[in-house]
Image (cartoon, rainbow, N blue to C red; front, side):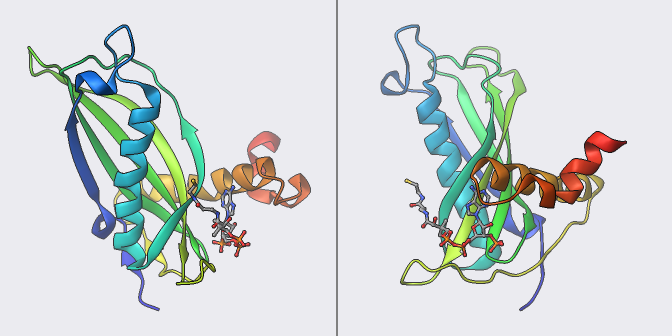
Amino acid sequence: MHSKTASSSLSTSSRIVLPNDTNVLGNLMGGQLLNWMDITSAIAAHRHCGRVVVTAAVNNVSFNHPIALGDIVTIEAKVTRAFTSSMEVFMDVYVEHRLTGEKKKCNEAIYTFVAVDQNGKSIDVPELIPESEEEKSRYDAALRRRQLSLILAGRMNANEATELKALFEQ
Ligand SMILES: CC(C)(COP(=O)(O)OP(=O)(O)OC[C@H]1O[C@@H](n2cnc3c(N)ncnc32)[C@H](O)[C@@H]1OP(=O)(O)O)[C@@H](O)C(=O)NCCC(=O)NCCS
C-alpha cells in the first residue's frame, strides 16, 4: 500500500456562528463545535485512506475561549499518524471576530478514525509520512496519545504502553 504525506490529507472548513448554534449567553455550544470538528476531521481521514471512516475516539478537546454569535470559525484538520486501520487527526481551530476581523487560534482537538469495509470491519490504511517539523513532532507524540486512549478504553494494559511510560521515567 502506498504511503501518503500528512499535507495531502488537509481538510479545512469555515462556519459562521448562527443563532441556532448558540447557548443562552449567545456563545457557540460545545456540541456544535464537536460536530463541525467531527465532519472536518473525517474528511481528512477519508482523504488519507480513500475509504469509509468511522469516529473511534475523541481523544482531546478543550474549549479555552467562548466563541460568539456572528464569529467565523475555521477548522484545519490533518492526519498526524496512521497505524494499522486507525488514523489520528489533529485539528487547529481559529476564530475570526465578526467586527474587527482579528483571527486567533482558540483551540486544538484530536480525534481517532478507523477505516472500515462495507461490513463495518476495520481495514488497513496507507502509512503516513510526516514532512514539516510540526508534522514530525505530532507524529511522534501520536503513539503516546494512542497508548493513553487505548488504556482509557480498556483496550491496552498500562504495562504495555512503553513509549507513554518512558515520559514519566525521564
Ligand atoms: C471503531 C470500530 C470500527 C473498531 O472496531 P473493532 O472491532 O474494535 O476493531 P479492531 O479491534 O480491529 O480495532 C480497529 C482499530 O481501532 C482502534 N481503536 C479502537 N478503539 C480505540 C480508541 N478508543 N482509541 C484509539 N484507537 C482505538 C484500534 O486500536 C485499532 O487500531 P489499529 O488497527 O490501527 O491497530 C468499532 O468499534 C465501531 O464501529 N465503533 C463505532 C464507530 C461509530 O459508529 N462512530 C460514531 C459514533 S456515534
